[in-house]
Image (cartoon, rainbow, N blue to C red):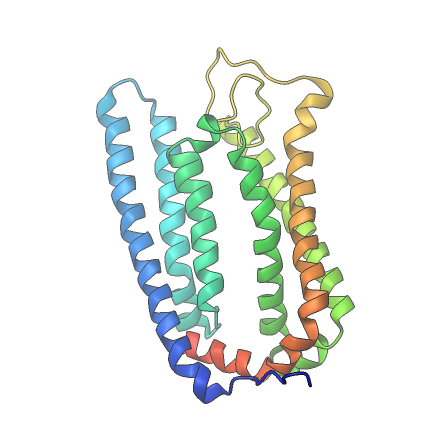
Length: 254
């Protein structure tokens, strides 16, 4: 005789979930102070090194500032606009921004490790899918449960949202490179870093499209993985819908 699996009640889940939220908030605070310390150290080193340009100092410092703002964004949304951001989602966003801006640009991981950009873009498809689910909840408000029942719509929306946001990001990178003279789209053959010098050689022809197209393909792959997982896990998630809503309310309380 098959053994029946018992679904845990909210009374059993709540204490453990509250402890989890506290750990996530602690991680958020640690990330803030680590980012601030790295910003002071890295920008200070650039200033006192003597051979750094003000453009390089401003670029590196701007990446740290962006991460610090992202760290405070969930609190602003919660207090000023009464928008609930799940603690796990906010931490994942923070970690992604830390890897992309602090490690990638601030500490030049893009230049030191050519594969760093591809890894982040692969994960960005997953992250954008998580944001898409959150946006559905925020936009639909009290009616979101009905739309969650259509798992095929959800899967399609996740993929389209991720691709759309990925394309918008490429437009932002192109615009930023055109204005600031940076290499965020990695159109240089001799470096994958976001900053380049007059000695660096640009890519030509079809090769110049490689970074943009690779990024979009990785966004697609990441979102497809989430969409496929969602198709299989959807029915279980609907069963736990009420518990998930209570979890989000706790996120807003902490």
